[in-house]
Length: 505
Image (cartoon, rainbow, N blue to C red; front, side, top):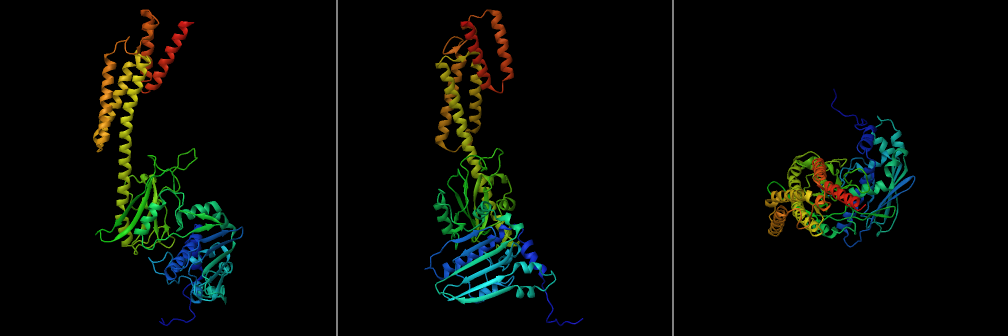
């Protein structure tokens, strides 16, 4: 067998193009993310090379037949525009820029008839246009050499421009019918709020606090403004939330930071829920997401799967971000996860401290709230009892039940007393317990005709037979409603009311 290679022999075919464009990006919205990602890299390059230049917003425009994505970043010169025609070629460095494989730019081949890319690099008085005939590419036989397809169905043009211009405009012309449903405007906005490298909503109360932490601990962090059909896109947030938890995640030797996270807890003692739904459902923005270069990797279920070993449902009590700082942790091509390597395994292992911390905080908050509720329950029960005695509205047949109910609240508070480390709260609890015990003693010492206790059988002068019947009825009611004392009380009071009305009649 000859070891020589035929100069005309092809080693890649058109089928690989379909695999990389349609198979790699089954969610068509990822196409927009890839283009936004490239625009974000261009803005970062402008920020680094020409810091005096203002950073303008990126923009997306959706029409019935086309999608336009524009950025005013550093732009591309002739060589970069020629490389735009190459598949899999990229000079970007993993860990330094969001996109680096040279594949994402071709993701749009699967959704449109033609791609038109116009660009001008900062400081160069030339404009360049690359046209990619996506429709013709898809029609080629799958065994056609890929080199031939790229050469025949892509082109580049040059025109005179101005040195101060810097931009990249991309038009996806002729969106395919089977792809249009993926770009419904409101759904795309929601998707970009969760994935794009956008700033915080100015109405979000904790935006400044989180922003300061990101600028301090996430190297190269900067938010890029983005509009969709003129509508500004901001990071998603949920209300009601409270002040964020922040933390650095260190490597095993505690020498280098590998992640920085922030998380806002729900003000309520439950998970964030979708509003205005009859069926209780987790809010679609609840949970934490990984970010690399401020762009989302995976979704809220990735951290739960990766490192939330116990009670992962508590992650839905928060919303927030985990910014990966270790450059060896590399997003997978479709950005649904990270490439499996030692750095990813170390990240997931060390991020376990996030789950531990947030779970501990939520449980501690629950303990504190339940402790406060237990104190309040004792005080409320005693206050209600005192009020009834003062108004002479406590039926004698419910006197023991009132004492029992207060005794139950005291037992609940006693069980929780050792869980609190707060001296002030402990003093309040002991005062409530003392008050409860005193009121129970008072009830136990009262007769049937003193201190506001009412004996309806005595007040209405029941004879022995009537009293026996009445006591039997009350006994049955107590048995039936022993687990619902409030309902029992309402029924007894209604019986009293009816008996008094009957007596008057």
